[in-house]
Length: 235
Length: 373
Image 1: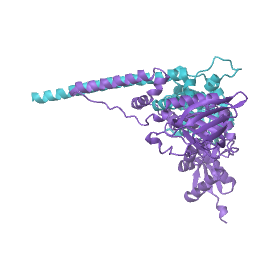
Image 2: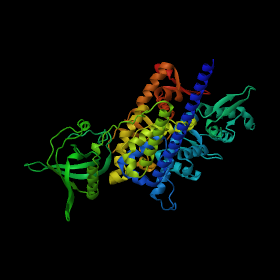
Image 3: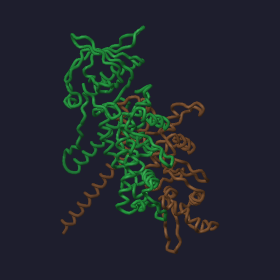
Image 4: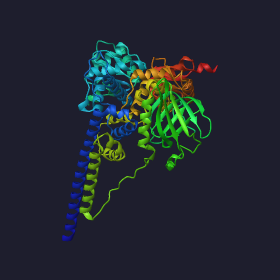
């Protein structure tokens, strides 16, 4: 009996030791991962021109970034004023443009191609990391630069600006509904009592069929219309 | 020596080969031992880490390993030239497939009719010295060795493993040169460490997947191509985008192409206007990809001239088979973007082959039954 108890105790001890070691090992790996990220980041901020100039190095370096999941497009804005467009600034806005397209393309399946500019901004900054985050006004400008590639990405003006990355014209009613969803992430007919039901339904239905709105029928018979584009970040 | 070219006449690269410099309008002169010189005509030249590739109606490549005694010639009142001797040497085994033995001239003279000689020569010197072709392609991975027994042994092994990684990290990131030398070790380390990155953000994962989905291209830059930057960009874009295009049913919105291509280029991003200019050149360079403005005003790249029509035809076939389709369903079946699917369906409607049914389930298209009569 005692021998059995002893065996059990030993087993537990081993297990404890094992998980202790695993924990320490993982902690080490994690800190190394961070160190890796930081080293790559400081390399690219200091030597990007140098890296891009040397094709061999370029390939190897960006392979590394890809492998570790670091977005290498983290150049910062030049000190030069806007009037004289420096190379540094061109690169800066190009970087943001590519990041914005990446965000819209990556989230298309979720959002149906409609994303609020604030959300897009947040994701872009998430890609860039905190130390390289950009102001919203620069994102606007970067998206504006994309106009030469055809109207694949449009900003819908209004109280809350949205980016539309699928080709579609939104009418006033549809815009009204999108704007009303700001903050809460959803709309329901109660919020539009000055509209008649047909008008509301028509506008909402067109958004549903584009995949921009999801329907949530509540047990009390009410229907809420949710915008995944609006609620992604708030959740 | 024969050279394989891509569809847009850029050289097909050997594993690990990169393009270092491009130069247009170079006149090449071959001199054979005990024979008269033979003028080869004007070429577009690529200097890569492995070869000197000359492209014109007739193409040839010379392994850098063969090049000896390169020097500048010409000068005052004469066109700038580079002259070098060619001596055939044994190449590493893996290169035989890409650089078969061939008859070589004993001396070559390159005439730079539009300048650029000095930089080209410096780059040849550097590339010849670097001997990239002698770098082995595969590097063995270090295994964790367990020495000793029991907990102590395992602990020791883990400690050594951690220590090794720290070494790699600190040595690899010392400066650019060490980064380049240690890149393979660092890459192995990166793939190991990445498994630890358990960020639980599904949206961010999806965005990052878009970022990482594509491999690398050689990446034409203003530095390597100079004045030929935009036309060469058009060629490279064409070669690169072909595969994504095929995976997307032959049509890709220009904006998506911009994102994918730039992501593949790593950090040397091209501007939207460079991209737009390059796309304008597709037709005059007679490249296989066309730019199309779709009915909604969106610009898209298409494979050949008939991509939209072909796709529309197969969509109509599918609709006759299953009854009706929305743009979403069509996009899923044909693995194309919804933008493109809708365009094709609308085209089918314009041709009178399809008719629409708009409802809460979205816009659905049916086959136009009146056509039967």
